[in-house]
Length: 405
Image 1 (cartoon, rainbow, N blue to C red):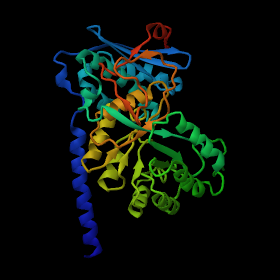
Image 2: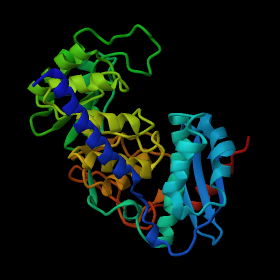
Image 3: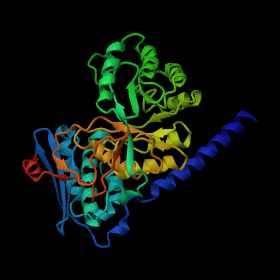
Image 4: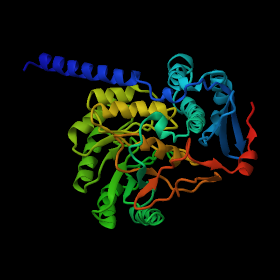
C-alpha cells in the first residue's frame, strides 16, 4: 500500500476514535434523576486548622457536605475564595457536570491551569458530592456510576529513588511490612525525582539496572510489581529499561518519558509489550484523548485532586473503557486522599487490579461506621454510608476557622 494511502487510513481511524471519545465526553456523570428538587448552594466555606483544610457546603434547605482539602490549599486558597466560591453560590448542585464544564471551558481555565485550578475545584466538588450523597442516602460511587468494586485492591507506593540500592531495598521492605496483607508494590526507577533541589542529579549510577531484578528476587513471583520513572527517560532509554521490566514481569511502566510528550509516549508503547501508564500530571482531556485516539497507552491515571474532581476523572475512565483500556487513578493528598480514591474506583468498571496506597496515617479525626478502612487480604472495603461514608469529629472540625484573604 502506498505510504500516502496508509497515512490516510490511519488518520481516518484516529478520526473515528476521536468522534467516539467526543461522544463519551458529552455524556453526564452525576445521576441528576436522584434529586427531584433543586439543591441550591447557599454557603461554601474553606476552614483551616494549622495545615489542615476542610471545605463545608450547605444548601438552602440545610443539607451539608464536608471534604478534606489537599495540603496544596496553603498556597491556592485565594483562587478558592476569589474565583471559585462566588461562581458556585446560588447554583443548583444537580447541575454539577455543567458547572464543572463551565469552570474549565468558559470561566477560569484560560487564566488558571493545572493544580492551581484543579486542587481547589476538587475540594469543592468532593464537599458537594458528600452533600448530595447524604441527601440521596447513597455512597458517592452510586452518584457517579454503579458499584463495581465494593473492595479496592491496593499497592504499596514507595519512593527512595535517590538512595543506594541496598538501602532502598531495606526501606521498601519496611514499607511493605507495615501492610503485610498487601499483594502489590510500586517502585521508583531512574533519577532526578522532581522534588530534588539538585538540578544535576541523576540518581546513583546503575541503580535502576540493579533494583529491578532485586525487587523481584526479594518479593518473589507472587508480588505484583509496578515501576514509575516520573518522566525521567528519553525514548531509547525508556525502551531499554522497559525491556528489563518485561524480563522481570513487572505489570506496567508509568510515565516512561516526559508526561506531555504524547508522540514519545506512543513510541515507547509501540516498542514494548509492558503496558504504559500516564496521566497523573494532566489537567485537561487533550492528552488522554490523543493517546487513546492514537492507541498510545493502556492505563489512564488522572489524579482526582489535580484533575478537578471525580466527575471529570470518571469521564476519563469512560473514554478509556470505550477502547478496552484501564484506569488506575493517581492518589495525592494526605488527609483523606485514599478515601476519595477508593470511592472513585468503586464506580469504575474498568479499574485496574491494584491502586495507589500511601498508608492510612492522617491527622483527620473521623468515624466510619461501614468499613474498618484497613488493608485486609490486599484490599480496602469501600464505605457504604451516605456521601463518602465518614463523619468528622465535631470537636475537631469545630476548631477549624474560616479562611479569609
